[in-house]
Structures are given as C-alpha cells and as structure tokens.
Image 1 (cartoon, rainbow, N blue to C red):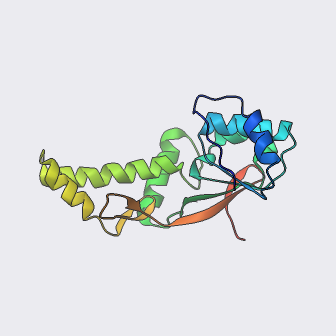
Image 2 (image 1 turned 135 degrees about the horizontal axis):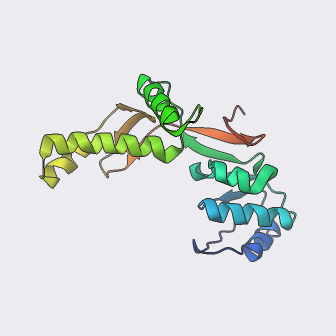
Length: 178
C-alpha cells in the first residue's frame, strides 16, 4: 500500500499520479478538496490512469463535474445518508426556493452546518454563556432528528450519523446499489 500526501495549494500532481499508476496497487482512495480533485482527475486522464477511484463526500461537488466532464464517471464515495425525514423535506424545499434550484439532495455541508447550528443554538439557549454547560449539553446529543438524518455526539465530541455509498454516474451523484 502506498500513501502520498500533498499540500492543499498544489496544482501539479503528475509525479504523484505517475507513482501511484505504477506502484502495483489495484485502486486509489482520493481525499482532497475541489481544486485538488479537479487537477488530480484531469491529470489522471492525461496520464492514462485507469485504476478504480474511491473518494470522500466532498467529491460530490457540481463544480468538479463541470471542470472534469465525464472523467469522474464511476468514482465511488461515502456520503451522509439521504434523510427521508420531515425536517429534510422542509429544509430542501426552502433551500431550492431560496437558490432557484431543483435538488433532490443537499451539498453535505449545507445540511450538516444547519444541523450543527441548530444543535449548538439549543445548547446556548439552555446554558447562555456557560461554556462548560454548553459542552455538556452537546455531549448529551443522542438521536437528534436533523436535516442530514439522525445525529448523535459521542463522549469525545465526534458527531455520528448514518452514511451511504454513492457513485458518480452520467455526471449525477446517485446512491450506489452494488
């Protein structure tokens, strides 16, 4: 197994792509941000990289599809499970109306940010400026029904939520059906 790191400001990944292309591995896990993804994906095509690509939730960015065309086809990645909750439907309707869109899912950080703000607002409402109290309230969050689904916070302060496997197919982000 090979691991390659890069600085977020990098734009040329040809050396890394070439190294991974020739390292004997059967697939690659791509972790990064939109500008990096765009450059890496375009350079993979340029260098005839043909291994399967697995990634993380922030690959689900329409700007990446726009900038790379069909080069993202078949990338499999993890994403928060699409919620069927009432909260999701209401929020999605408001989001689509505000931004003139017709989305069926949300960019991950939109729903997660909204849920985090609502959870934090509840802690602040209960605790005011008492930060220790607010921290304790956050650590009590279990099975909060939010826009991104059911959210819990563990004893270390990490959020827990269901995820699903997704796939880029024909330039569209869809649930992977195996």
